[in-house]
Length: 145
Image 1: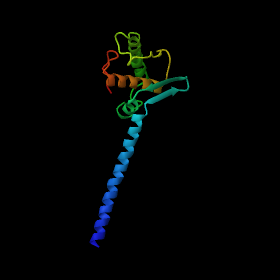
Image 2: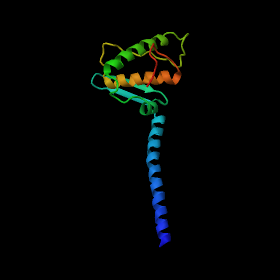
Image 3: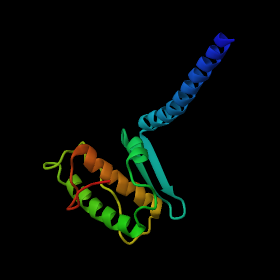
Image 4: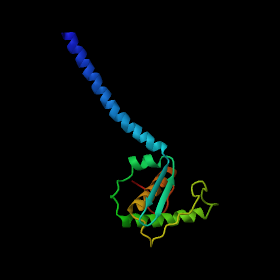
């Protein structure tokens, strides 16, 4: 009888340990999928604007380190994005001063257009990710999360 109780306790203990590993492995698997998925496409169907971000690691960074949606107001995001876009576009036009592998294409962002919260949120977070990852500074603000 003592052997059966010991075997049952050992089995329960092993099952309990395995169930916690499964939960963490599901989380790890989800984060690994985010790492491998390098393309983010955000579209605002109402006004037909979209952002396509092809950047290794951005999805993972967005899910693990960025502030949640709703933390910043849309006005805040629009103001920062406009300033970051101005600096970005200046760097694109000066390939002799700035790395052309970092600043390849200009961004068409106009302050008089309402792109919606999601587009502004993704663009803002990409700028923060870009500055932190590549040790760049787009403007006077220190990039932080």
